[in-house]
Image (cartoon, rainbow over all chains, first blue to last red; front, side, top):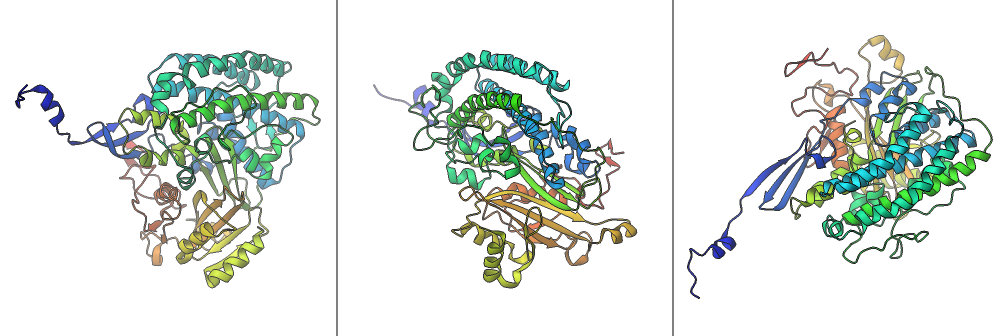
Length: 401
Length: 176
């Protein structure tokens, strides 16, 4: 058959694409808050990504220079509002480090239970919202159903559902209510079989694997170079978890706990449970692996909560007495990082010897994790951007502070 | 590796560029001259025993009081201090570096103090330096794209400096 130029089939291959700037956000649903990405695209393919932040900047560090450490606790809640308990813990530990304040065993176990429950709640949102980014709605509802029960448990502990201000320098504001740990145990028993549903809905789902496996591959060197942390770092195969490798003041909380860091070592993940297999398409460091690490950490956190409850029941001492609201701080500066669900959350406190810190600094894990997007996205399709940004599991409240 | 031996090695390697240290502090720190920070960092990352491959945080701390009496009471010369928190993912140790800068370059108010950028050593320094520039007002020489990150691009002043004053008005929004 003779071809002529009018043939639509020829034109289809002859279409030229122009470079175009596409603005994504600051209200795009899959940007997990008010993040704005400016994409330079050639057709469907991205050549450059520029993230713009600061839409949620609330001057937390400046405010911290005018408040005492205990007064600043509610502001830490509002940083990573999906894991507020872990933020409280990070700041409390820094202040205790400066004051050289020791906690009883009971208070430490209480903190492990609370912060690991916070980790489960946070990873559940991370998982559900990631499904949402990729266009499936049901995992989100399943995840929120379970998270709701953790929020109910937290509400019973401190009265708040999202911004707790529960863990404070010196311990916690109250002891766990009577009978509360039994409710946690009942919840864990109920959650365990549901986890396999999540794996069926997302982890091993064929469409999910197509959307995430082999997308946004980050090498271990790159992850370290960009200061990535948490599941993003471990998803690239770097064996680094502050609960084991961090400072003693933090790691001593986990003394006597049996757990394995979730990371692919010698070609496989921890095998303490019946986890789904890694699909053949997945490459270490891609979106799928980051998601998988998060899912495995839910199981790990469940184990830790169970062990924590055992230890809490038999531990001696009290749950800790919060320091005075206007406690005078010794002169000096301290820095401490904790393993929050999204990565290493660090706080830096400079004191001039008065009750109000001279300078407060929050090192945000998402801030560093997000900076890698401009390196990961070029070469991908526009539809892969939500998949990559979602796999970093960012919270803008923490990035902008 | 203990703090003493790190300090010894750095002093041997860089001599006068290591301007001070406090190894008895809660977090022991080493002070480096502002001109040498890039070379020191490159050495710390490349050295086989140190391998400080992870930059945790860069912080700018401003020491100043607009009230002369309080300034005297503070017991410190007015200056800007930059604090680098480093750690090693392989060796699992940490190090704190401090760099002392004048508040203004050549004491001309409005001219930002300058410091070599470490973006070529750790990529994560890119955003951290942008944040320090934005909030504390330090100019990083050699940074590929130094512009504000948290505040809007047309913001005036450096909010985490001690003499910063809230603007009365920003694009029709009342400040106070």
